[in-house]
Image (cartoon, helix red, strand yellow):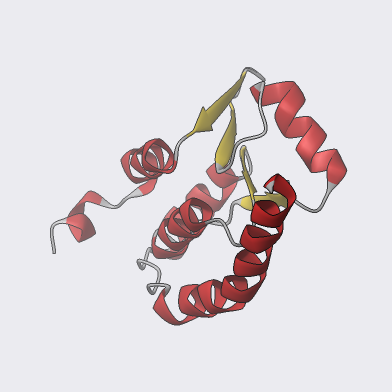
Length: 135
């Protein structure tokens, strides 16, 4: 019985994945505009961030949309289909749960941030232009 249930949900996931990814492409907001100097600083800061994700995870899609809205160039690593990324996530963060944002400080200290709402709050607090947030 357990095998049948797993097979059922695997089939549902296979059927829904293309629609979820298409909806993400169609509904991704335009990035906020920054002047080139400010965007270069943001891009430099983003080099210390890595997001571990599954492509069709709804919570990962939510974070990716916010990354796109904020105009961030964060490296994304597929922890579902790449065993080395999955192993990095488990070894560093302590568990295989996505989305997870790996944050490396200037002092080479690494923080692993789980939960989509926490990741979005962190990114907004760090990168959102306060003038555009109010308009």
